[in-house]
Every structure is written in structure tokens, then in C-alpha cells.
Image (cartoon, rainbow, N blue to C red; front, side, top):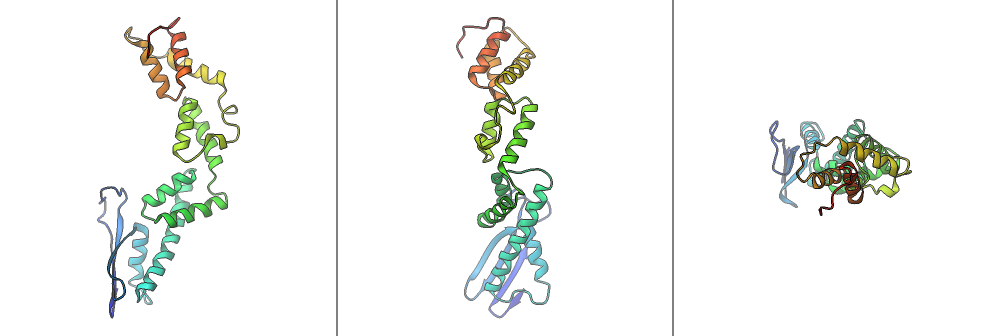
Length: 226
């Protein structure tokens, strides 16, 4: 789109192309104006497509200020649509959703605004997400330590999940699961104790529980040191 002392264009990435560090590719908005000079802005692909269509319509932005205003509007509309598409597939924590939007090319300000609004109306609920995540991982055989670590990585404090851990996994249940996992391990007669402890720790069981279970499974255990 061109005009006196002002022009702008949108370049979409080649189909399937991915820039290093940008898995989904982003559109390039080029702007030239008397007050802003030559500028290049990376925008989310969905926003780039909307801008490209806008450039072909009557009443397209004819000044830098108007273009940037429309860019802000489209960014919020597209980010909201992206958020809805994501949460319709599965539940997300606030941090996960924020990181996905930023990864798609939306600014941190826009992404945070969308996440805050989603949280305000209950579309995103970290406690609900945490409970669902913990329940599914307990069923998958994960130990308490690993579940809490992965929740933290997703921005959720396990202490904020109602009923955690007793309503999800009691100490006795965790012990039984660890014993079941350990008892199915193939023993080679070489460093079995250390290997079993490492295996249980990798599944999210505490070191204390792992060593206790390894000793029990190995029928009296071992005095070997880790």
C-alpha cells in the first residue's frame, strides 16, 4: 500500500519455511514514512495475513499512526482467536498459554492481556489445570516429585491445587506404585541397586523412597553407596 511519503507492505513466509528460533514463522511488515523512516516489524502470521488483505481494501491505513493502530487491533483480535483455538483442544495453564502466544509472534503485552482476560472469565484456571494434570500423571505412574516439578515448570504451584497430594496420591499408594514399577525391572546382577534407584528417581519418586524400595525389591537391599 503506497501514498505520498508513506508506504507499507506485508511479506508472508514461504510455505513450510521456519526461521531459526521461530518454529511457526512470522510475517514481515515493512513501513516507510516521513516521521518513522524505514521500519521492519515481525508480526504473527495470522496478523500478517489480515494486514495483507487489508491493504487491498478501500480505506486501508494511509498513515503510519493509522497503520500501527490497526496493527494493535488486529493483533488482539488474532491473539484472542488463537487462544480460543488452543483451549478448545485442551486445558492450559496461564504460563503455557502466554508462552504459546509469544511463540506465535504476539507481543508479550498482547499475550499477557489475552491471558489475563481468559483467566478473569474462567477460560484459564491454573488450579483446575493443575488438578487435571496431576490426576493424569498419577495414572501414568509418575511420582509426586516429578509431578510437582512439572507443574512448577508450567507456572503452577502444587500447593495451590486443591487436595494435593492426599486426594490424588497417598503415601501408601505411592509406595505401592514404586514397588510395582521396581519389581518389573530386569535385574542383571551388576549395579542393580543403583540402576533401580536412578530409574525410580527419573519417574519422580523421592530419593528416600527410591532407596527404600530398591532395598526391599532386592530382598534386603544393598549397602552400596549411590
